Structure formats: C-alpha cells, structure tokens
Amino acid sequence: MSDTGENIVKDYPKTHGPGLLKHEDYWAIWLGALLLIAGLAIFLPNEPKDMRSIIEASSATIQAEEARAPFRSLAWHDANDKKERLRARDVGFAKTVGTYLQGPKSWSGNPAEAFVLGEEAAKAKAEAAKEKHDKAKEKLAAAHAKAKEAEAAAAAAEFKDSQANDAARAAIGEWRKARESESKAKSAAGAKPYNIVGSLTVLCVGMGLLFAVGAGFMGWSVPKFLLAFPVIFVLATLAYLLAAQANIKAWGLEYVLWAILLGLVISNTIGTPAWLKPAVQVEYYIKTGLVLLGASILFGKIVIIGLPGIFVTWVVTPIVLICTFWFGQRFLKMESKTLNITVSADMSVSGVSAAIATAAACRAKKEELTLAVGMSVLFTAIMIFAMPAFIKAVGMHHVLGGAWMGGTIDATGAVVAAGALLSDTAMHVAATIKMIQNIMIGVIAFGVAAYWATRVERTPGVDLSASAALQEIWRRFPRFILGFIGASVVFSILYGAMGNDVGKAMIDQGVIRGWTTGLQGWFFCLAFVSIGLATDFRELGHLFKGGKPLTLYVVGQTFNLILTLAMAYVMFFVAFPWVTERLMGN
Image (tube, rainbow, N blue to C red; front, side, top):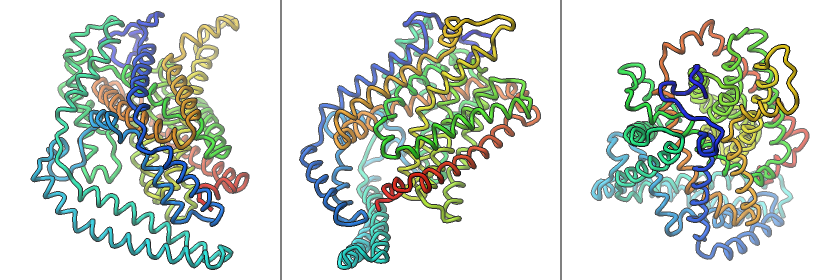
C-alpha cells in the first residue's frame, strides 16, 4: 500500500512489491503455513491412549441407543462423553506445547494470581472451593437419579408416551447442566500452583523472531522491530489480563476491547513513540492470524447443519452487505465508499476479520478500518447479552436462537459465549453457523476487489478488457486470503480422510484447539493493540460527520437481525424441520 493514507501505520513504510518474499500478504501465508505444518508434526503423532477402541465401542453404544430411544439417553451421553474426552492436545509433548500458548489465568482480586500461584495459595484456593464442589456432587447425584428414573419410566412405556419422553428429555438436560457445574467446581477444587512468566517470555521471544524473519525480507529494520516488539507483546498480555478478571469475564468483555483501548490511551495521550512504530504492524499480525483461522473452517462440519445453515449465511450475508452499502450511498450519501463498504462488511460478514479483508481489497484508510472495528466491538459487547436475554424472554426455540446469533453477532468468540448463555444446542448451532459464514470472507474480498477495479475506481471513458480487469482485480485482491482458503481446504481434506471421530480428536481437539487457536488469538491481540497505537481521535472526527457511520451500522444490523431471523425460521422450521429435530436429539 502507498503512503496516501491507506497504510495502517503511515510513519513506517512497507514493501509491497510483486516478489513472493517482498509482499506482506505472502509472508502471512508463509508464516501461517510454517505454523500449520509445525502443528501437524507436533499433534498428529500423539494419539490419545486406546483412542480407536474407545471410538469403536462408544459409537456402537450410541448407534444402539439411537435405535432404542427417541431421545439422547444417559447411555448415549456417557458414550459420547468418552469420545469427547479424546483430545490430542492433552497427550505428551503436545500438552506441554499448549502450556506455552496460555495467556494470563482467571483472577479476581489479585492480578498477580493471573501469572503466579504459589503452593500455599493454590492449597488455600482448593480448600475454599471444596465445599462448593461437594454440594455440586450432591446435586449431580440427585439429578442423575432423577434422570435415570425418568428414562426408566419412558422405557417402561416403550417410548410411546410423549409426556414421559419429554419428561425424560428434560431430566437428562438438567443432569447435563448439573454435570457441567460439577466439572467447573471440581476444576476449582483441584487448583494447582503455576508460574506462567517463563512461558510468556518464551512465547514473546518466539513470536518476535518469527515475525522478524518476514520483516527482514521485506526490507524493514529487524533490530528496530525486535526492540519494539516486546512492548507490543506486554500490552497484548495486559489486554488478556484485563479480560481474565472474573467480573469482566462474566460480562463478556474480551481482549479485543482492552487491546484497542490500551493502544488508544497511549496514542491519544503521550503519543505512540517513534521507536515503537516498527512493531506496530496491524496487517502483518492479523493476516497471519487469519491464515491460521482458515484451518478451523472445516467443510465437513457444514454437513452437520446442512442447507439451512448455508441459506442463513451464504444467502443472507451478501444480501445484507449489498443492501447496506446501497443504503449508505443512496440515502446517507456517504462521501467515502471505502468506509461504507468496510463498515457494511464488518457488520454483515464476520466482524474484524471481514473488515480487514475488505479494507485491504478496497484500500480503505486506516482510520476507516479503526472506526469499523470500534463499532463492531461496541455492538458485539451489547449483543452478546442482549440477544440471549431476548431469546429467553420470548421463549424462542434454541436452534432458531442459535442460528440467529451465529448469523448476526460479529465475533466468533462472542457467538460461542452468547450461545453458551442459552444451552449447548444453541452454542453448537451458533458456532457452526458462524463458521459457515466465515467462509464468505474470501468470497467477499474477491467481490469487493472486482467491484472496485471495474466500477468504483475505473478510469472514465476507458474500456477495460477482460484480461486488464482480471489483472486489476488480482492487484487489489488480498493475497493472504489464498492462505486462508488453502488452510481450510487442506485441513478439511485431512479431517475428512480421518473420519469424524478421529478427525475431531486429532485435528479439531489437537492441531486447532491446542495450537492454531492459541496462536491466532495472540496474533489478533497484537493487531488490536497496534490498531489502538496507530489511531489518533483527531483523524476520526470527520468520519462521524452527521453520525452517518453509526446510522449505517445500526440500520444495517437491524436489517441483518430481521432477515437472518426470518431465513433461519423458514429454513429450520418450514423447509428442513428434520434438521432441527436431529440437532435437538429427537
């Protein structure tokens, strides 16, 4: 990008030449690919003990129970739980590696406990939680006995009594909730001493050196980058620390908000020091993180939701994007089309990830991207609580509620948190819908690049040939999206070849949850800190003129909420009701 205002950090120029070793987007791909290969090498050799025999026996039990009962029985859940506990990230060296990706631990009154917990403190913490765990165990035993009795009553009626079946289903649901509460209480009662200062230091050095490799090839000053990077890492760690505070965590205020705020405080008070700017590299960090994100977009999981999920995302999303952009141009008369499309993509597709890809495709200014991300963070924080509360208040079906939240709440983590406030079913549906929607990031980036090349910035009176148009689209297209798509394809193939159960244990609960998700979170946090450090409120003032960006977001999100809800209802309850029944375990 040039220095005409499009750079995220204008004071520190980047090299964006055609060479594969000079382009920031390509380095995001190379680093992402290197990390994914390393993850496969670490986790795939670490199969959980007796994994295949456990899968075989559990699958047989599940199949038999599904043929016996019209709901998920106690035996079904026990067998499924055995498979769920098979996680490559909990085995051997892979487990050790995972400890080096951890951020600050949850804490309440003393922030030092987020980093260090001594033996005496751990013992006291465990003792304090013991009584709560004992009560949770009693409630679990009572809930299990009640569920067992209700299931036996349904079985005695040969599962032909709908009331008995519903009672058994409800009792089993309560047992599952009691089991989850007991598990959390057990974890607290089993507190052990830890010290993550050393692992954080290793992580800082490792990530600094990793990004420094690309920095050197792109012509940046490696010594200056390495001098500044630890400060960016410390700020990212502080963002994680604030998000880990018990009360803040309960409110769902994630590290994204704190990372941006920390950067903003510095940039708008003392100012971002010149020596720090070499490591303030928003795009470099977040593009690498997005390549890693691609590995979690597994095509095989789309089958779980099927056509309803595809319609809710792949049909609604482009409609909302196009209509919101049109509204901004036609009615709000927004002067900046790049701001218009960036806000529209941020709101309609998947928040920050889509905003970054779209901003790169249309070459939006850094303050426009900052504004879009800021509004996304604000509204996500509101929706993460408002939507589950509304769904509960109106008694909305949890499959419908999950699909609605998955298609409208911007951040993937926020979608999971909001779904968890309802039920496991809502969380599962919401997360899967969001995953399907994330696939649109590459499609939207290509579409925006094509539209900007052939319509928005086309030279008047000059006919653009097909080859010239393709060249211009390619010049604008964010190259890192190729890494995002490539990672998705490769990991989907690996997952499919292994089969769902083995794939879940080795890929989903191995490479992804034990490796790429942790790294991706850190890379995103570094990027959000950088966004704050690179943002001056004085540059944002003119963008709020007339309140147009805020109006655009509110109107677009309102349209998104209405259309997504309508499509989800039609798909899950009119066109494909059997999918809903399957998701509910009926």
